[in-house]
Length: 72
Image (cartoon, rainbow, N blue to C red; front, side):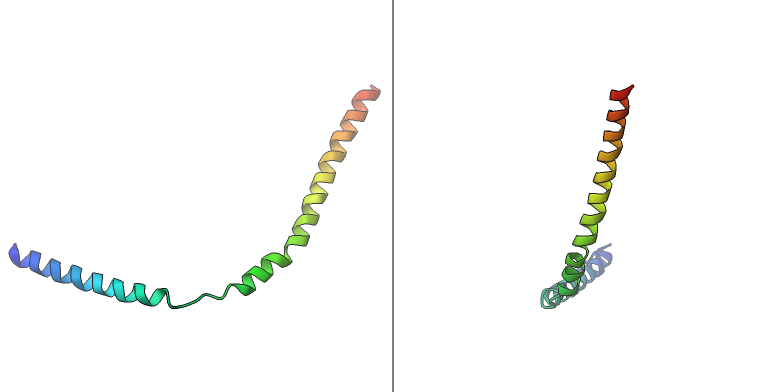
């Protein structure tokens, strides 16, 4: 059992060392997100138009029902 604990400890130390090496390299790489930000900004106008159309449709249906109820 002692040999198993020794092997497990060595494996854990090797895994921890590898994790530290990979973690130290991960922060060095900068991710360029300018293209993603530009795409999101480009989609702002179409999304606003669709939202406005849905809102106008909703208000139009409510106004039609309100006028119909008032006339009957």
